[in-house]
Image (tube, rainbow, N blue to C red; front, side, top):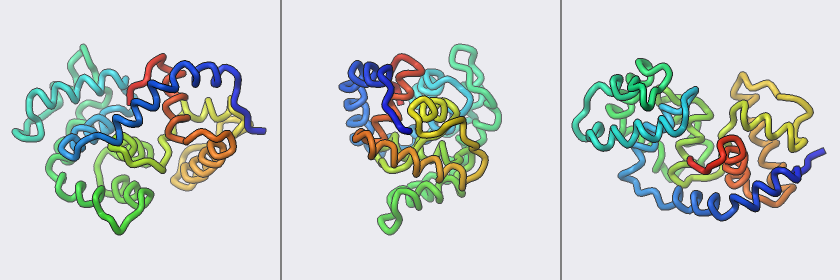
Length: 208
């Protein structure tokens, strides 16, 4: 049975305004910042969000997009270390090289958000379903879910699943996503709010 645990209600009441402000920030991200939001989402898998955020700040300061350079040294800096920095550096370089094509995927008015996600996950090095969803959310495009083991843990706590569901295939991802959206409809809270609620519960703050 799906529930909204008291612990989550308390946390929601504490962070509601901050979450709503963050969602507003996403909607107001300017197109010229999209590239660096993509860089952030390429860096985050299995690395700390605060480290990925700092890496992006350094890349912006050094004008990575405008000038172009190997960002591996930046990613492996001990003060904001990014795991798998060699592979992620290659993904960042490829994203810069193919940025025009990536922009077309984002702005294509003939595709809905799930089609945009599929295109990004298929064609952008370093992005899977989760990272593509994350990128779209961070540029204010809502309607897809960012799913990992932390989210699954909370979905179990909320009664959406009896145990941690399998997350191996795209089919698994879409099934979990659909059930998460159904749950959010049931409790009357937008999915993008519940997403940030889960993450603030884990980290104690609302980032992105």
